[in-house]
Length: 230
Image 1: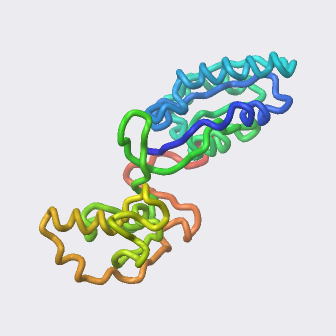
Image 2: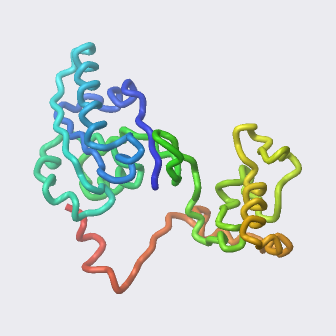
């Protein structure tokens, strides 16, 4: 899932500038799970911004809308009229959702209320860790299901560096050595022989180094891409 956290309320208030009629748009997927951008958080931000306005003397009106998924056009249908009447939208989606809305509502400022952090997994209530960087060329079958790109601080592909000690990374004693995790996992599943193979020089063209990425499934696509713009 995408993991994000709320910006400081002072930064959010400052980003509103002179806008008077603000729509606060929650997103009911990843950012709801990580307690940052759901309807509950949108209502809390509305209350905090109202307090900020009282202190600063600003006069603003806020409307909260709950959008199931801000990166998918079909979930905006019931809110288009409300959003179109706003001076600006404060989006509680991840960076992808903010950009999707900015593309969809081209004449309307879309302001982020969150800082998008990483793709990760839930480790407990209110705690997530990074698991994947979406590099586009997965080798998890060779490393026991543990990713050296995201789990090794240096993204090393053929064993640990010389700085790891007692299973911990030299970056911080709180970080597990990614390659220690890989070794332990391969031993547990009886595949230590995989460590004798050499992982080839990485082709990073499938990662962010190749520019903005896209995925098209021809059999699933309907209509033209620009039809989502209103």
